[in-house]
Image 1 (cartoon, rainbow, N blue to C red):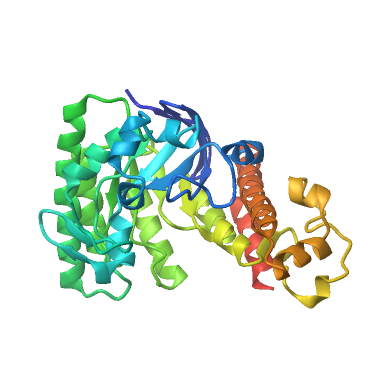
Image 2 (spheres, rainbow, N blue to C red):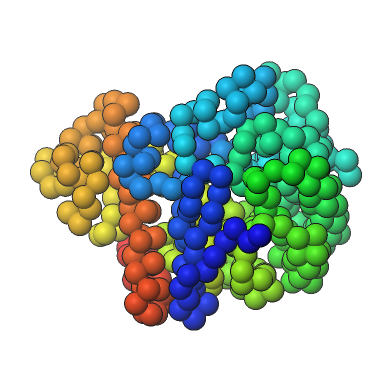
Length: 369
């Protein structure tokens, strides 16, 4: 049974409903990153008030802390973190890329040296599925291998082969559980068109509930990223959700929606909030600048979030420059609200049959300033 339904289309863009164990997700959707079971500085209630439908957590980090025993004791991640909406868990494959100095890849899996205490752990495709079953993830991701931009053909080919091998093992393990949790496949292949095509075809042959495009936003020029996304999207089935992993600049999200992508995650809005960089209807605002010292205006006059409805730019600057913890919370509330509202605007364009390229150019021009 297909758990994804396309309800509206406009050219290549679409609106859909993804049915999970913890409720429906309306796509396109942005998933805030809650790596360790928490979107930094915010409570689950904050997320609900903002309008977040689904969050992302990470297998590698949750396996290290709090660990499998504690998750088992709480009968899953949802209970542990008091979040009753859907959760997607990333497999730890990105850590093969981001923590490359602390891991060793073999055909069987990945040996990590914990960044916390140096303890060695070995992730196999099967073990990653086992832990996600324990977590109770609504959407599970298989172990994969992401290569850096500029990796040579041979290195990329070997990583692509391993990703397909691990995907097959993951699917076999997943089927042994007879669970209603979903399993997505991840497409790799670097920036070689033949390897991207090869990876897409092999992952499709195995068959998954949805398909993710991995291995982009790793330092490549934007035009290279879009070549990959357009190529893969043209091959993927129209009746399955499409997830573009780790891409999160506002203009990039709009362009990806234009290409038919349904799901996104990125640390950009939350990390930038903690660094004092805020997304607004007038472009990025660096709240630490002295020009806001006496500014009585709301952060964004076109935003009705808790932050913009109650506080001035001067106060937000004061909080940030004095390193008050409230600064991080208020900034994060605003940035995530901005992202949620941006997605809503894109949905309205699709519903009304408007050209999303217009919105893309508007947002791109805004952030070029």
